[in-house]
Image (cartoon, chains in turn blue, red):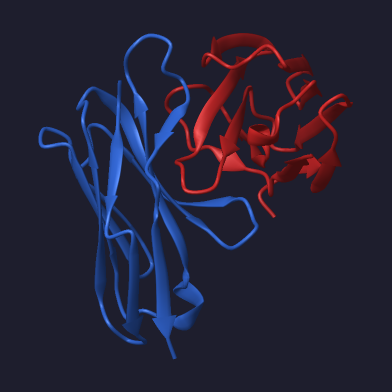
Length: 114
Length: 113
């Protein structure tokens, strides 16, 4: 059974810092990996999707990398801003039968101090 | 706004009640999903529908009954729930199953008394 782990569970940094969030997964047989952000009491907003054949994706100040063989992904946030404060979730979609949904980690709760 | 709406946003029900959660997607997608988010646990996949056919049922108790009458609407019918079923229930959709980005609704916060 696929398991997704996110480290750290919580992170608080001053505004302007560059930071890295980590995600690891136990089964490397995945179709893709997706990073989301979730604001308190709200649904999820998709940030980046990396297909299993890709190594990284970039969107603005965000860069996500994928090392499928080692079961790892990182989300890099450049020049952090208070508006980046949220919970960041990593999720993988397996390539095995009956695995059409996403398996999520518990998330990293990020606070950017003004 | 992601193009996925959920109603109601909040629901309080007793253990003997019957209620339904509704999800609607305005994106022309063919796949829809129900997830459960409990406190201090990862989001858990409950059901997957592709072209109105259930393609995955992730060992969910029978007190949760999904219905997908068309590709734009998804329901979750609830009956005789337990207090531990209190959670945020999230609906999502994607163009196709398996390979596409999933777009999530805002969720329904369910409290079972």
